Length: 131
Image 1 (cartoon, rainbow, N blue to C red):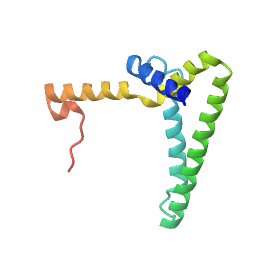
Image 2: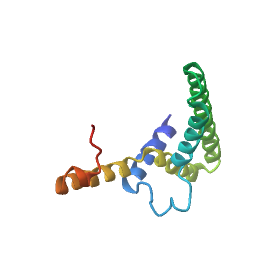
Image 3: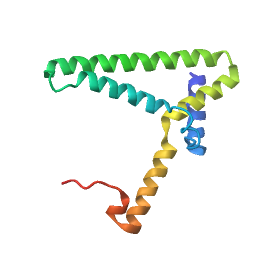
Image 4: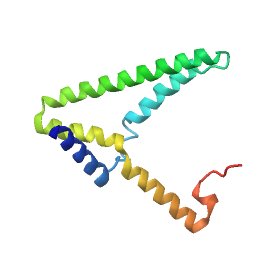
């Protein structure tokens, strides 16, 4: 339990201090982007107009189960691999976990939108109006 807390604390600190390095993602596929590709693939297959509601629900549950088991399996595999690296593995695992926090980047984007709203109004803030 202490190891998990250490990983989470270190991941939080990494995310707050560094965040997602923007220079890295043009060269690598961000895990969240990869996950969204899979979600879109399932959506294209299982949410067709010619399917009735019951069939859509079935495909939705299948998608949820595949994504959940897949994410848990990848997480378990990465944790097992990191076990062999001892302290370096703890740091690598914390870096991986920090990628999914994204709190620094989220707050950076929110601050940018807030500043644009304050300076130039709703049009510059990029906030869609409800009509």
